[in-house]
Length: 237
Image (cartoon, rainbow, N blue to C red):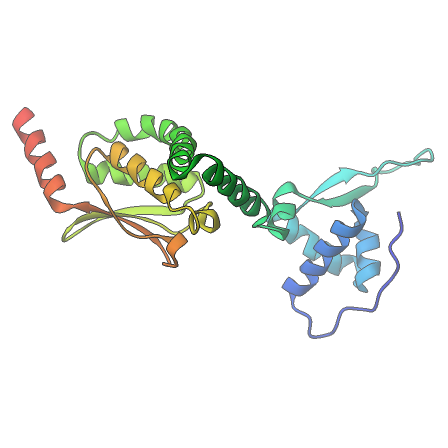
């Protein structure tokens, strides 16, 4: 596979722009050697290696042994670079969102809003089950459970944190994997809120969501629930 040599990268091009061009070349041509990428971009072997090392560390690319049609001589086998699955998904981050939205529209049209709610509950059930064990180890205190939940949600990709505040506590999620879908179908947010409530063990209030245009999904844990739990714990001991 050959890549035609293009014009050298502009002198003022940033590293990010150069790596974007590497991504586009790999997307177009598939497995490509460092030498071919360097030639296409007008970069020296050392310069293209610098970019590829960064992209390997960021898991944007991975290496594969290059298949040779002719017998290979001595030395290390030639390696080619390809995009990772994560990098390909980042190129079109809302593709699956569009498919999910279309599916939910069909469900709503054919079976009504209640069917969408039932579907949403089913989807978050798996998340609830994955979180359950970690939450149980935190004990009965809602804030401790919220902190444990935040750790699990962070692993799940929600970038969450929990803290105590004057009015009780709050759980914040900096990222929402389904925000674009939930903007049209708030049943997804409602189902997630119900799961948070069950896992923390008390009534909670959703104050903000990314799906509705807020910067962070914020769930409030009322102070009354926190105080009641604390009293219960002291009585049992």
